[in-house]
Structures are given as C-alpha cells and as structure tokens.
Length: 145
Image (cartoon, rainbow, N blue to C red; front, top):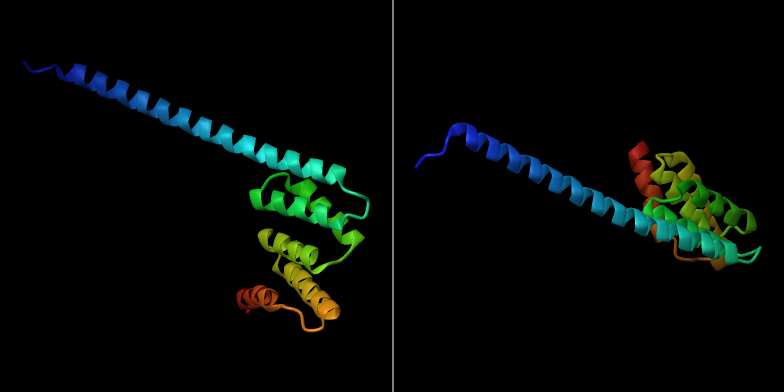
C-alpha cells in the first residue's frame, strides 16, 4: 500500500522542524554552559584582585591573563594589567601587554612592549632568556615588512 505524497511531505516537514528545534536547543545549552564557565573565570579573577595587596602586581597580571585567554571581562582585565604595570614593570606583565596588543591588532604597540620586556630581562639577568620574545618580535617585523 502506497502512502499519499501529501502525507509524506507533511511527515518530512515535521521531521525537519523537530531536527531544527533540537539543534537550536543543543546550541542554547552549549552556549549557556560556556557562559557559566566564563562567568566563573571572571568571578575568580575579580576575587583574586580584591584579595591582592596594594603592591601585588603579579596577581593583577595573572588575573588579566586568565581573562584574556578566555576572552572574557576584557575591559577590566586590561585595567588590571595597566595597574600591574604601574606597580612594577616586569618581563611578565610587559610581555602580556604586548600579547594584548597583538590580540587587538596593534603590532606597533606590541613591538614596543616586547622590546621593553626583553630589555628588562637583560637589565636584570644580564644575558637572560629572550628567545621567545625575539620570535614574537620577528613575527611582527615579517608581517609589517
């Protein structure tokens, strides 16, 4: 016994609608889960900064770095990094500022901070390890040249 073509079209339409609804539901669940994880990152970073001492440049920089990696709370993370640099300019937070500028498509500013980080290493350690910074600088020069 053959089914009527109109009946088959209706069944196909129902299947397509159910499939589309299922996909939308899955996307909403995944999005909500990712947002919750991002919120936890922001919450933990804020808590760390609130508990940091007034001269704790490192906690400010690490908290900013965590937010940058997760791409959350970027404005406040940038402010924390600037505060960190005001307290002390170290190879770590100078390099992180360079990375921030790379992520924001500002290679000239990134270059400035990478060179400052490299100079800080050399000033403190004499012949400290700067190869990773040289690679970052080389990438910028290749892009620009």
